[in-house]
Amino acid sequence: MFKPVSYPSFRSVLGQRRALSQAVRVAGAHDALGGRLAQAAGFDAVWASSLEVSAARCLPDASVLTMTEYLEAAAHTQKALGIPVVADVDTGYGNNLNVAHMVHEYEAAGITAVCMEDKLFPKMNSFVATSHTLLDTEEYCSKVRVAKNAQRGEEFFFIARTEALIDGLGVEVALERCHAYVDAGADAVLIHSKARTKDQVLEFLQGWQDRAPVVVVPTTYPDWHADDAVKDGVSTIIYANQGLRATVSALRDTYASILSHGETTHLEDKIASVKDVFALQRLADWQELESA
Ligand code: SPV
Ligand code: MG
Image (cartoon, rainbow, N blue to C red; front, top):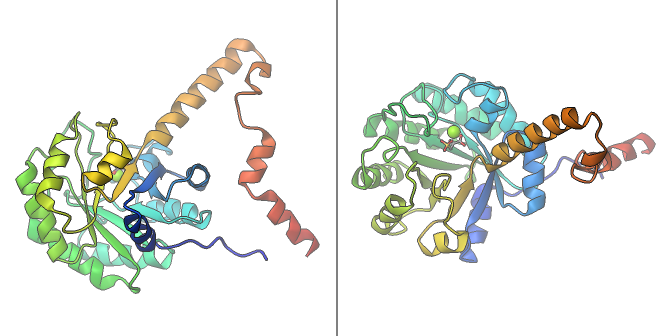
């Protein structure tokens, strides 16, 4: 039978992994192909990263693309996968009205989890050395309430992301904000940090006392083993941009070596075969339709 791929909700994957005392491991991707490779590697979910999606178009991660463009990337990715997509929805693309529209559209497209940050719109990527001003706590809580009221089904999962540490406001502020976000209805919180060590995130986890699931993005503190992170109180780990960075390195090296060698024999055992690409496209399943 040739049916669209089916997949569990992020909420159910989180429940299963928590029951096993294991983290949900989430890989960043900007398209269906990247998502499918992450799934094949064994990841539990895919992060439709705003950095990846905008970088794939050589645009800055600065609220330049529209909600529709981010949604299209996330929805194409989800359609190809048997694991859930967690959509990075930046600031919700505007005010409360935009947030309600965002939830309606993402849920209708089959996305089961979104993550919205507490910065002002337009936002800049968290690693850019610039100011990262936060929205007033109560205004963000209002957006959370709107998002939770806008969802149609019970499964839809809302992750509230605080950028308090990114804005240099400290762990106490991050904790206060996250408590307010869960009070407002958030299903989980994401504590982001651009520090070179995990110390502040650990301090947050100790203060948080597992009130709700915690998501982390260990890009700048890459030495945190997933098993240790779970023991420290983390529920979900997003490897947000390693796939994108690997793609950049691989393409750069491959293109340069074609020109320097003047032919491609030396590459043949280093790059995927065309047959491999056909398998990722599920070509055989599609070809069966011809003789149905
Ligand atoms: C992304 O991957 O788009 C994120 C994570 O939001 S970060 O780039 O660290 O802000
Ligand atoms: Mg982002």
